[in-house]
Length: 111
Image 1 (cartoon, rainbow, N blue to C red):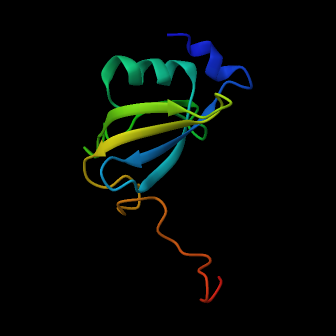
Image 2 (image 1 turned 90 degrees about the vertical axis):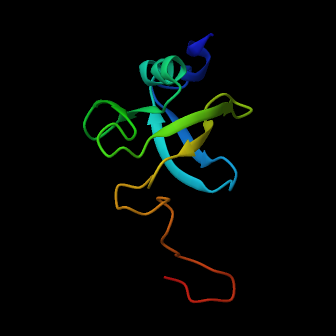
């Protein structure tokens, strides 16, 4: 696997995490080359924390693991779509998805 092709534009690549079956977008995180390799090696998601400046295995502490079903890249090889089987909540707030706050709805109030 040529991992370098995904890091031509920078050291980090956005990874959109989607739940298998429902198609729900669970979260967005970033991967560096090392976390992408660890994801391939283990079959579970690994990311790079920009705030902590280190690798993290999603769910290692909480038990809310993400088993990887497949990984796709976009047409420019600069964004990944990671389909997972999610155990428990994906969001650190305890919500199933990190995308739970409505800020706009057609015909509705806008925050």
